[in-house]
Amino acid sequence: MNYRKRTYQLLENPRTPFEKFISYFLLVLIFVSIFILAFEVYYPDVASTHKLLLQLIELAIVFVFSLEYLVRILVTPRPFTYIFSFGGIIDLLAILPNYLMAFLPGHPLLARSEILRSLRIIRFFRVLKLWGRKKTYEERVFKNTILGRVFPYLVIMFIAKVFIFLLETNGYWFTIDDLETVFGVVGFAIGLILSQKLGIAYGKIILVEDALLRVVGSLQSMRQYLPKKLIQLWAMTLIAVLESKKKATLMTAVHEKLGKATKKKRGVAQYFAFHEYRQLSQDLQFILNRAVIETPPVYDIFLKRITIVYTVLLIVFLPGYIGLISVLVAAFVLGGMYLLIEDMDRAIDVKQKHLVNADMSALYAFTKE
Image (cartoon, rainbow, N blue to C red):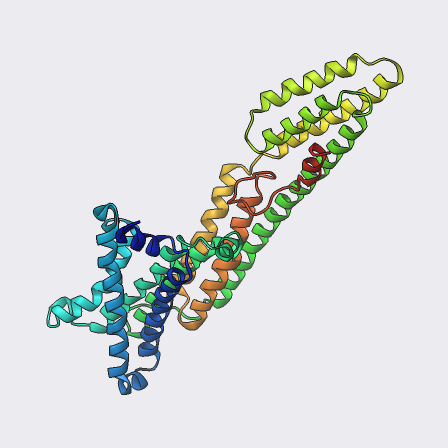
């Protein structure tokens, strides 16, 4: 592997301890840069006392980010694709304000340098870019959580709110007082709507799990009267259909085959086998319908829009620290509830991105007996 490929792997897919150290080091620099920006805004007197030190740290950070940007262009297989990609644009915007202030100090558009410096908040977007490249076991586990799902939205909303907060601090943004109660009541109402839908979605999963357990019980009983291979085929076909590996029509064919085998039995064996087959048919239809049925699109779109609109209104109208904290809490709680509802809407979906599925362990165990 030549140096270009090794460097590209180091930046895009860190695996060795050293490569991971570089990735985390860049992440730390992002937070240090944001901390310096916040420190300059909230404590201008103290910042002016340590102006030289803060400038040196900022220059060092800009140098590292600039070097990384140039290295990426050199080692990326398609440089122009990277330059105009989301990651490339973020990397450029992360260093651009510093170069504009350095090379165009007297330009009229740069007369308000504090506003230009505040654009360094864009560097927080680099967290999203680094977040998307994490491959370690711990990071995969973290991503497969509600926090991992909400995290990109938290970063975007945090950046937007901090930027507006900086404008408020410098007198460039309007503020409306006494809106906390209004937003609190509206947020509580949205939370009630989402919690009701969450309860319905979870209830559907419980019903599907109960039906799956009844199916396993029926199959175990029928195994005494019907060929074991046919019973195993039925169970494995159901698993394949629920995992979207086979079409439902195949399940219907196998189920009809099981019904024909039931009719061939005579006497007590036929009675018990047919009784279990009838119960199995009811549970099968219930599972196939309930497992894939989703919320009507109109209702789902409504939930999504009111959650987004409410959070945006918090960002725009709720000022100061209360607004910043409220945005983060609302994005995590309401956004997390919506994403969880969306995840649970399909009772069974074995795709990796889904966090909650109906428990099929009993059915899996049955096929291995």
